[in-house]
Length: 204
Image (cartoon, rainbow, N blue to C red; front, side):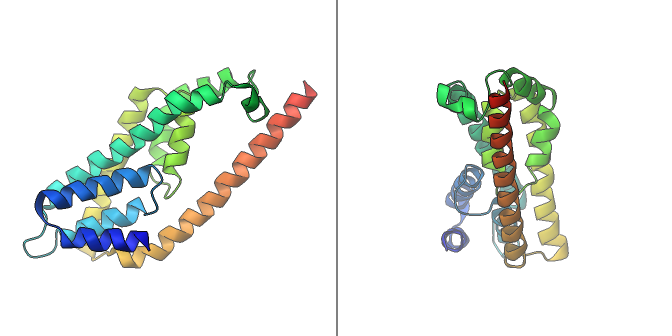
């Protein structure tokens, strides 16, 4: 419902107000707002096809910057809040203090590929980037990989819409289904991680 309202409002705007709303919608989607970022990219690309519509390059640039802003904020929140929470006594039942340095070292070594792959996972990006930030993922490889992946994502949306007639309505169902599957998978992974951490803690 909120996604439909947001897209309806976006379709009525022109000029700077349209770009500003597009930026806010795409960036907030990366932080967990209740609308799909992938659907927004397709809908925005379609606005460039209307007579007198938005400029395709400006749409792409706005969406690309908004993606980076949303992802960077998720990582920043992880760095500044999640990393502190992981070091509080109550967090030891989820992440044993003895394992934290190893997890952070793995995040440093695999920051780029994990960031690149995460950008193509619908629905779970904000949560995963927050977790990555909580494990102190370094900024340089994250920004480089995320920028490249976002460029590919925005480019695919533009080319698909303009050359192959893609529209956001046709992708709503598949994106929602993928979001549900990935949400379930993330919950399972976190539960298994928590149970394993408790088992290791009791063994110690």
